[in-house]
Length: 188
Image (cartoon, rainbow, N blue to C red):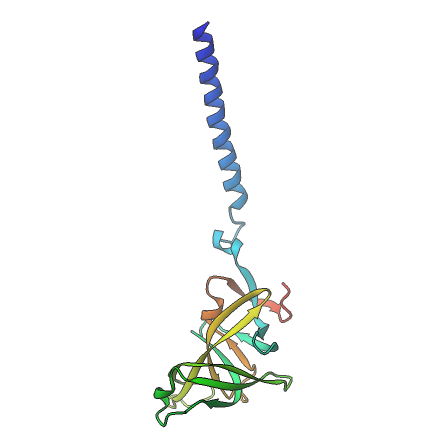
């Protein structure tokens, strides 16, 4: 009788092990990517080449160009005032700054932040050897429920098609870019 019990227990243990393996296998199959996808794609939102991004502090929506070639974001600022401004621009890093931002509809708002950095950049509308110094500040941006505080270059983007350029620092970790998708309103 003991050998029958051992035999049943062995069969039950073998069945339990196979059941657990089957459950793991079925779960793995359910999360496998479809053709052309990766596992990471399942946890990321898909954003189009153009999107409406909100600057959270002011609540202003901006028509934005999504640019995976840009390291950081850039926002249209028509005026800024640095508290106790130093003569040398690099000496203003860490100082409070008020920035007047403006979207494509002409809506404006002042946002208060701190100068985070000063960089030399060359824009697509400038000559090849023409570099300009620009300040970077931290601003909270949001698209489709994803909110991030990121470094944003402030500059006059009047000659640009979009008042906001969204760079990799906002996209990284949360978004995949589909250039065929129009995600202007945050809908896929």
